[in-house]
Length: 438
Image 1: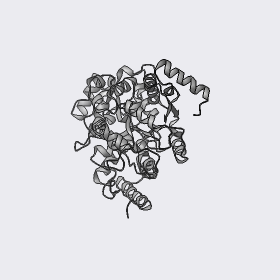
Image 2: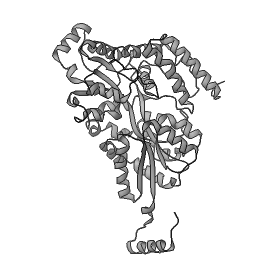
Image 3: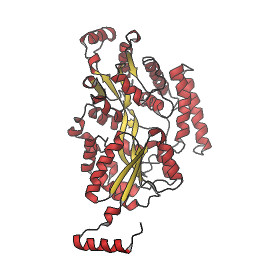
């Protein structure tokens, strides 16, 4: 910003009088994120940074459906509207390979963030390519898919007695996916307008795929080898076939009209007395402990995604890392902000405000785990998360998985094996097109 001679002299006078620089007052940073509660919490947090440093930080938001398009339009134009972005984990390949993100490897290593942050958040929010030791983001908003449930239904003595008589074990938080299925079946009573479970089915972006990943990862499966791009025998493995069949069976216990459902509908399943259990990202659970938004708040409990048949326990990763945009004219100031953001005290405050910290030490603390009814489940989950492909062509891979899986889950088309064999062929063709494999 060009200064007039008058303002410069006034600034010099103020420096001499006060002994501090006024130029910090002129410095501003803009962080771009999607429009949701965590962005509001981040604005509260960065207001503290402004009070400490004199640097104004604005969290600019846009609705989720527009977030990716607006971000990459600005990136591709090499625009400097944003200094940092809290971008989806799946963007990291496309954004780093295109030169949109600043390489944070030295910063990461200097501050030993591989040890400071929960390992899975480092792997999926920060590192690209997989196992490369190259880092492009600082884990910022941890998130994953977990479950809410109706404690009052589960703890009803008559229900407990009937469940024990039918299944031979006590009704409670499911210890594995078989129990999850049994409980969903038990509470599925369409004649009473009461249903067993609410799951993700919306195929317009990543909802359905994230839901299916919950099953795949906990059944011991993987989507592919992220280093070699091998998918044959992996995405269509026997474990994944069983996982897809299990997810489809859960769909049979959902409320009517549940074929395009995501986070809004899955919270409504609890607030409107529709389902005994509901899948959702932890970021949307605060509304379920608020009596103003959930009349059943006191009767709502939470649990982590249960293990599969062989004891594997993982969950689909959500959340985002914060990256410095390479076209920013304030990169040095952005790095100073990141140094403040990663401090343990800052991460504690971030968690207190409602943000989902990725700091391992904060997550492990009793203060964090006891702060809300879902924090313990969140802590357990964030050390057991896996993510979708982060390669630049991830959007095509996502569309292909939706196109194959959705008709099977919601329309009973084909078999799980046929679906996954076809998906393997789709992904092989995509990786060949982009010269990932020969």
